[in-house]
Length: 413
Ligand SMILES: Cc1cc2nc3c(=O)[nH]c(=O)nc-3n(C[C@H](O)[C@H](O)[C@H](O)COP(=O)(O)OP(=O)(O)OC[C@H]3O[C@@H](n4cnc5c(N)ncnc54)[C@H](O)[C@@H]3O)c2cc1C
Image (cartoon, rainbow, N blue to C red; front, top):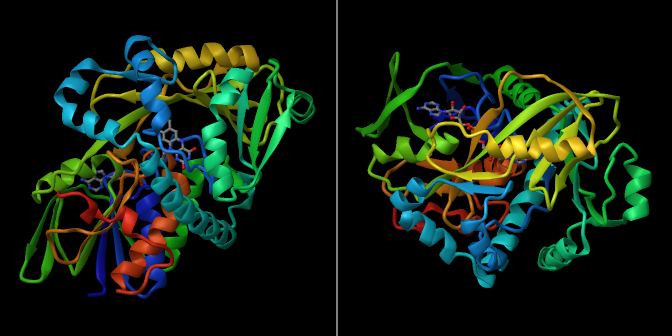
């Protein structure tokens, strides 16, 4: 039972491969693309133990009317997607109650604390210190109204003893003099890391996996069949056999698993990024979430990456640059931007399950098949911790944290 295939070499699949090889398994990682080059490439680079508030929380219901009828930079949706996936949308909204918010926060806190500690060890082992900065996550509020709305999240953070510093206007000006707009308040997350290049981090982790004896095949998994106690994998090039398989194909997991008869309640919160050079050198270490603007930006001295909010639509819908363009317009007032560094915005899809929790665990209908996907907005943060618990499950050991909230069995698939 030692010969394992990991399908999908995003940050989740790479971390899973590392944990399994550490535990003595023979691990093959399969992906038609370069490791870390898809969703894990273009994110905002935040690793934190304090992203505890899921998107479908009670505040979502309060602002639903506005979200539906008023276009926002932070959220857009496609009407045809809403109609064709109405059941997914309604089930997602049904989770927007306080009890689920509290339940999810507790589960995510445990996962993120484990994950942050695991990332710290991996960063050290892979000599990746030069591509990270600390603290790495700052939320900035322009108005007292938006800061007041944040009180529910602060309650959740306090309950779980998340470490943060509240900054007032003067402290923000002093610590971040490059920002050309005045902010009312800031929350700086002390236990957070910013990865300056998420792709470089994935590559460092991937190289470590290969050095540890791992194997990579650059092929696309077309079909999986369980025949006589073996998983038979049909790729675009070959047929191969494995004892066990972990599916970590992020936004593509729904499609891949539908062949095996699973109906995964997953949809895509798409997001864009753009890159610009700056008119002057700036020294801002953390990634910054502009709360009113609904976008995140981070800088490496003479360039800025800006990432957009949510576009709820089909995985393969035509690109719509409105949101990222609005984000750029708003960012120009905060930091003087110079030239575009990429021709067109990058697009990625956050894989989201209806309860905003990842799916980590044993496949309910098959032997020796495992799931690790659905990490939505926080997959860089949660990847390393999810890898620890799935590898413990595969070993049939007690998991380091309570993994029940992430179990695929929580839904009838
Ligand atoms: C704009 C934006 C900003 C974000 N910011 C952050 C952030 O700051 N912090 C954070 O924690 N998270 C962030 N996220 C979320 C994070 O990027 C994702 O949750 C994470 O990258 C998901 O990783 P993954 O490995 O599951 O998916 P992916 O990186 O997409 O990897 C899946 C892999 O599966 C492969 N694959 C697909 N089909 C097949 C097949 N048939 N056979 C073999 N392989 C296949 C793909 O090629 C891909 O490489 C952000 C996301 C977006 C879009």
